[in-house]
Image (cartoon, rainbow, N blue to C red; front, side, top):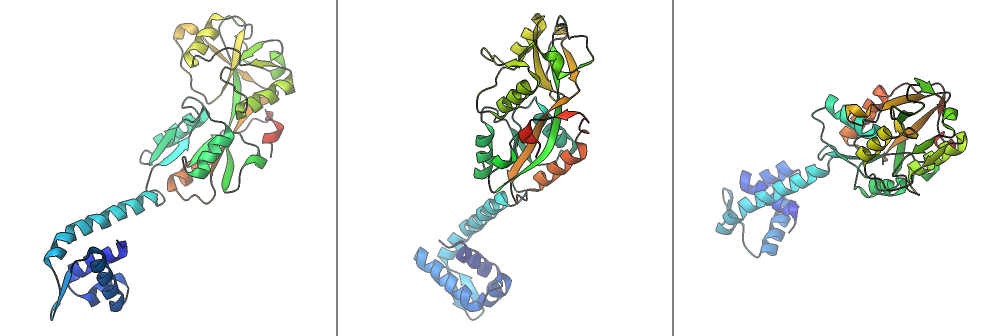
Length: 309
């Protein structure tokens, strides 16, 4: 059944004349007649009866009219759902506790009427997350991806650089330091559970350890952030790395300490990846917000060589 024929039938039913319906729809009277004839042929009924005063609904036409209106309403809702801004912007934030999740949360708080859905695809790598963008599973994702690995049809904008910090328990030798150099971490065990081969953060930490001679490992199962905090609190030798914009919560008795890194300051380079030409107004607003609120990059910033382009 032709939707435009249904639309034409409803227009004739409302105004009572073929010519008036043609004027309203911006088509010829002949086109109106053809559409109505085709619809009646498809349904095998007479919907409209012509009279000297115009057109009147037949009994079948009266029965069909309310359903025709519902069809047009459903089509309008379907069209609206895929128009820019007609549905929530779906953004992959990796993990709600780390910098991208926190940044998107702050954006939503400053734009509370924005239609937005934050999801966490933390178990997929950058290539898989980018493929989700291409397929439309998500509209955008935060990833650290070399420029030469961004596929055609996807744009990448470096919008979220956050310095790394050392996180240790109160008995750790570096617990009372205000700031340290990456070189000061040589010989210390840095545990970052959850690193898996093929993930972009694996490439980042590999470059970090090679550059500064650090011992960074992901040995053992990852039982979640709470278990990691418990392990740090109980250890005099264990440390981990977290982003300055990450939000972790631990019991006050743990007394965990964040220690700044400088000379140079390692920075994790989050880029926002989205479909080229995407016109969703919430994406435009999010990009503008991230540009406006981006922290000033440290003068001694270090990023992997593949992230410098």
